[in-house]
Length: 368
Image (tube, rainbow, N blue to C red; front, side, top):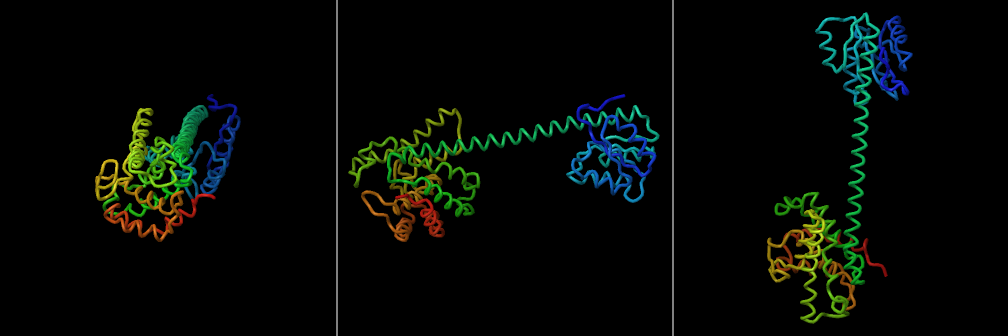
């Protein structure tokens, strides 16, 4: 006679039959190898099947008063909590059509009475072995999914920290910028959310891209690490020559990110956006910006969003050479740049949500 798949952990079998003698017979055959539960009608069987822990297998009679075996099986397979419990019909109904109906409802086997104990035990053991293997794979898959999710989350956290560290390299060169990178990344996200349904931008500004923009925005000034201190930290206006050197931060930033990509040996979505932002956020809609003198739609969308975010934050922030400007004056200057410095539609989006910019600025205000 076959034994259960794991002799150290007995499986639980629910026997469902309305005849006391049949319940006694099945219990007698099974009790030395398995934990046995019994139910003498369909309603009770469904309650037992849904009680934790659920049975590992159900031996189910068909001809019962009230809910018959077919209905019980249908209910079990319709319920996510019980649908994976294997059902073996154990019945006096011996017609081929009866068996076909039972298997069509989701039963794994069909045994006719009177039963042969060795055949019954062999088939029970076979189905329990199959279920044990299926449960193992399910648990393993669930574990692997959790592990993948955990490692993905871990990698994303490392990515976020790396971005912040890289961005802070530029920030630490200019102590007055404070929380500038945190404010600007939130400004950019707010603008992107406002524009994502706009016909000109909706194809580009997907939820995924907006998330990448938020991640990559802090790298817009990474190139400032290559600007000499006497220019970057000068407590006053720059000379024309000094300004030309300062302007190189866009190219230096782009080149630093390109080098990071080469080190990775692959293209990374957020770094592509970071390159566009670092290199082109000083371009102007009318073509008078730098470093390439791009105009209109030739300026990457990511850079157009950053242009407004960067200028707004520069205006409302204090520097050695200037006082912080009130929000209302900064808004007026952005509006005045409509179609000249800035993309008109991005200015419209800014004007619609500029109170959000003010809120972000207050939330991430520089300390001291």
